[in-house]
Image 1: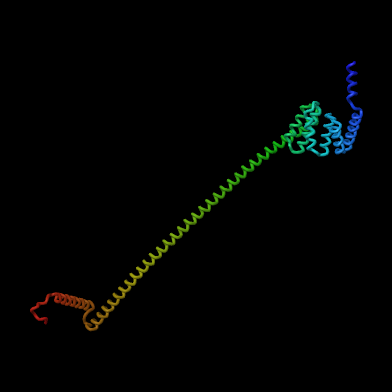
Image 2: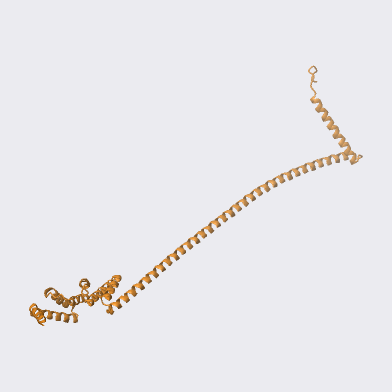
Length: 288
């Protein structure tokens, strides 16, 4: 009993009633400003409590951090919440990690936010808000990963399809080029065939022309011979007619025999003249 009374007496001696009154007044004013949405005013009051009145209560720091957060001063809010993550009070540690997770989530730092929500649940398993945020963000990240995997798969499939299309296009182009080359080769062969046929025809025409010319020459020669024979026949006929007129008593057959005999005599005469011409002259005899 004496111990309790001593503690109460020491407490009364160490606490300045005026300071206590100032602290209580500042807390009330800060709370009123916060509830009224005057976060700048609330921040000023809470900083006054911490800096001037040297109040180190975790609850004051929590309220200051919340005022920073609502005023959208995320830098000071983050710093203040981080200082509370080592608090001896589970609820304060849990609340601080929860708010840090909310800030990280807003900044797009999803993995960091997920870890903060997880730490908030560990500090206070009864913090349902932190658990809800954790599950929602985890589902979001899982869905995002699935979507990324699906997008990657679709992208890979699209690439494969594009490769197949490119290969098919190349194959089609190759086949088309081969077809054109074959067509050109075929046209070349046909042209060579036409040229050869033309050459053969020209040779044939030339040969026919030469043969025709030769035939024409032979025909002309035959005609000439026929004309000569006809002329001779006419002369012979004329001579026969003359002889027949001159010797009317001689028959045609007899006249021809006489004519033949005359020819033979003429031949013999000519042969005798040739023999005489070939004999050597006697030098001792005169030329006459």
